[in-house]
Structures are given as structure tokens and as C-alpha cells.
Image 1 (cartoon, rainbow, N blue to C red):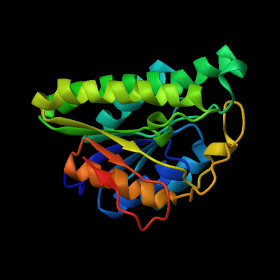
Image 2 (tube, helix red, strand yellow):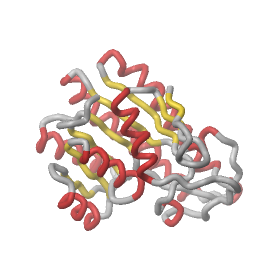
Image 3 (spheres, one colour):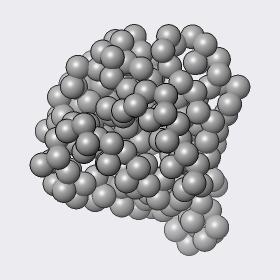
Image 4 (tube, rainbow, N blue to C red):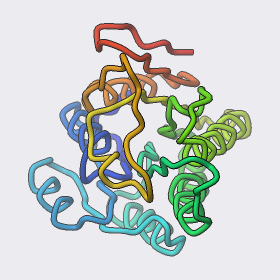
Length: 239
């Protein structure tokens, strides 16, 4: 997909990976739809990015997801890409996971991407093309004590993504997964519970570095991009 002139929804766009992705794609000529809860940040970003649209929404609310996509269709008449980036961590040992916290991150990390995908499938199918990029986590490819509940939600997102890729391929809709490693964002300051796990020897990547991986699979339609641990000079393993 050439993103110039394309309508791209980015969730969790008010900061971190989402903001970096929105800036990158807008710089390449995309019409970026900025979706997140923090309205003031979104409005400031909308003012900065030409042709963008800010939509304040809580993605834990199914109605707000549907209303957001409807607003995009009303404004632009199409949806070319969806980047499901919004998410929240829960970093405590499994024996201490509170059900309310787990349900909360399931709503944002699993339910919201599923509902957002469902909301864009019909317009993408009608236009005969589309791309969906789901932002997972490297923790879903590891056995890492202390983040099991969070990793479980991302593992669920992985399976939804893989099956969606198979189901939607014939409609011209490419579904991809990006697996970030440790990234220098506000993520660990906004956990549902717990704190940042200690991971010796891991270098935090910049949000822009992850955004470039997202843009790469968006353009190529690759099944996945695995962002390795370590310095940003390392190559991204795509397949």
C-alpha cells in the first residue's frame, strides 16, 4: 500500500508509538485519523498534522468504536488502513492479578481490536482493499514472569490476527502483526497494576523506530514484523 492519500486510523494516537506512527504516516501524505481518550492531546496533534481527524473515544466502549468508524466514513467515505495500537499493561505475578484489572486490559487489548477490525471489514471489502496492523508485544513470544496476564492478552490478539489474515486475504485485506520490544513511552507509567519489569541488557527503542516497522508492514502487507531486543541498528525480522 502506498499510504499517500490513504485514510489510516491509528488508535492510541495521543502519545508513544501511536503518536509517532501518526506523525510518520502523515509525513508520507496519509490522511490520519487520531483515536484516543486524551482529547486535548489529540486536538493539538490534529492542528499540527494536515488533513488529520481527531476522534476522542474510549475503546473499551463498543459503541464508541462503532461511532468512531462511522465518523471516519462520514468524513472521508472510506477506510484504507487500521492500526490497532491502543493497549495497557498489567505487570504483576499471576497469583496477584485482580480479576477487575485483567478484565480491563482484555477489553482494551483484545476486545477493542476485534471490534475495530469488525467495524472496518465491510467498507474495506466494498472497496476491494485494506490493511490492518495489530500491535502486539514481544512478551507474547516469551515466558516472562510478572507479565503473564498482559502477555496472554497479546497472545489472544496474535491468534485473532493470524486467523483474520487467512479469512480476509481473498477480500484484498492484509492483516499484519508487529511485535515491539521495550519502547521508550509512557506505557509503564499507565499500567493497570504493577511496575516496569527488570530486564537486564535490554535497550529501549524509540517510538519512531517502532513506527517505522508499522509503516513497513503497512506498505508491504507482510504477515509480521518482530522488533528484536538491543540497539536500533539491528534489522527488523519480517515475514
